[in-house]
Image (tube, rainbow, N blue to C red):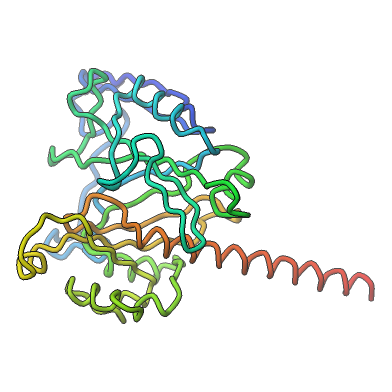
Length: 304
């Protein structure tokens, strides 16, 4: 509370691991943000403001959860926050979710989004009132897949939790360049990803240079379920998304960030999911080999 009014908040512990949500009621507050905050004086020309990293909002939050827990998590969020099912793919099974079970990938994804007419009365506080839609995605590994990134997260984190946060950017190439210069490391798909049959053409038809995207491991996936139209109309109105993923932020193989740029596509890109899964699996295998090598070297030194 300050001279501008009163803010009430409540912290709700989620059903997902140690995740907590803070609900804020600013209906009785007239300040610019929260009590105790003031507007900082800007000493730069807005026209010259750096636009190399145009991240605008959270696109989605992905939870890594134990197998067979998805329905319980969805019911909790629907009951408390008024979230509703968001179908990642139009052919997605209502009960099974979006399943990727091929090419060494065993993953189940189920997504939720906020229903604006929900009785929960939650809104997203964006100044331009456009209210970007932040989705919640639940990721489970499929059985009989061996050691994988979801199970590794659960093991190293100690419970379910936030595996990654997707940050929406208006220019993923520029943003990735800026973050790389700041020291951020990204996962990269196999080099053949950018030259494999169909992918290079897909990238070029979307107006991008495969070589530029490959510099930081940026993935592109087009919306395969576009409305029927002529080839020319499909090329002119092609819906696609671009994604790139950082390596884990912490020492453990747990939390990482994603940059995503959407060009009309609302889903998450099945092809990108497979490419990311393979990249992370390869990274984890290299980490384990390096760890075993370090352990062997230390054992030899101790013996000497």
